[in-house]
Amino acid sequence: MDRRRFIRVAGGGVIMATGLAAAGCSPAMPPQAIAAWQGPGQEADLRRWVLGHAILAPHSHNLQSWLVDLSVPDQIVLRVDPTRLLPETDPTSRQIMMSHGTFLELLDLAARERGHRAEITLFPEGAFGPDEIDTRPVALIKLVADAGVAKDPLFAQILLRHTNRNAYDLARPVPAQAWQSMADAVKPNPLRFGFVDAGSAGALQQHRAIAAEAWRIELVTPRTIMESYKVLRVGPDEIAKHRDGISLMDPMVVWMDRFGLFDRSRAPGPEDIATTSQIEDFGKKLASTPGFLWMVTDGNDRVTQVNAGRAYARVQLAATAQGVAMQPLQQALQEYPEQAGLHADIRRLLDAQAPAQTVQMWARVGFAEPVDPAPRRGLDAQIVRS
Ligand SMILES: Cc1cc2nc3c(=O)[nH]c(=O)nc-3n(C[C@H](O)[C@H](O)[C@H](O)COP(=O)(O)O)c2cc1C
Image (cartoon, rainbow, N blue to C red; front, side):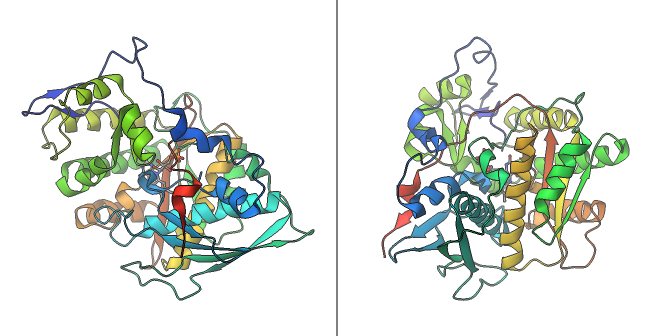
């Protein structure tokens, strides 16, 4: 979901959001929504300290579907919040599982930093089936003091990592040593990491074409675009209230919304400027992108999905250490019927052959202007008392 230029005005018209940002009228991100990015500081409780880092993990649509139960001392139980799923664009909850993997990876890095081994048992009451998830735990975690545990330098990147949806600098390719450090970061996880850059211009064009078409399909499929609309948070008040979802701070959008002129109640049509301007905008971003990366797993069971999320978190942290920006491109990887053709195209391009081989992550990579941190609800909102 892009964040600009798609305002349908109540009554049917559409207004483009431009100008005010350039005039310096941008509203500021509410400090309480991004307070979690200060880190847990001197928090004395080790579990809360590691969780204060874990909640900064990337999550699809920033839904933060992590629920933690701390009722048994020295133990953390992680479950999925069933109210925070994406049934239209993520019908099997594969991305939700990956987003629990990113959380566990940051938790692990934080535990190591404090001289503890995170003993993570995935699906202690059995794994979810392939189509649905339920209330059984994703993980049972015990933090065990261990003088032999190694700190990981990726820990230092947790507070600095952000998904970057800006245009990238096409003239600035990703250096070989940055690709290498991303590939090295994956190594603990058994999956195939690949990338393409300016060295293969033809392949770059194929990546851009598939990503652009997959994005168009998501925009013109009413139920999938509405799923994003439902988690749009427009302006500082909504962002401060929800602290999740997709933040829209564009001053014109905020202004229109304040006056009741931004209609989020129905999907724009394929020819509406609300749709066409987003397609054009995203096309420019793809054209500015000097590289793409991907991760392919041999299977697609729940453990594999969680571990793919762990690997993605490590790759993005490694990129952050190199000053490299990244934005996942999940549209063509998604399992809803309208994407089937693009899904097959990306599998073919990335040589995912056997039926169970799965492209878990695909992302654009490059150098870009920095972005604001995305909101977080804060740890207390995610602790359940059983
Ligand atoms: C499994 C997964 C899929 C994601 N897919 C997309 C995507 O298709 N497009 C996108 O812009 N961001 C995507 N993201 C990034 C999230 O939107 C992002 O993590 C979230 O908004 C929080 O922002 P942050 O990463 O800056 O903390 C994805 C993240 C994860 C973990």
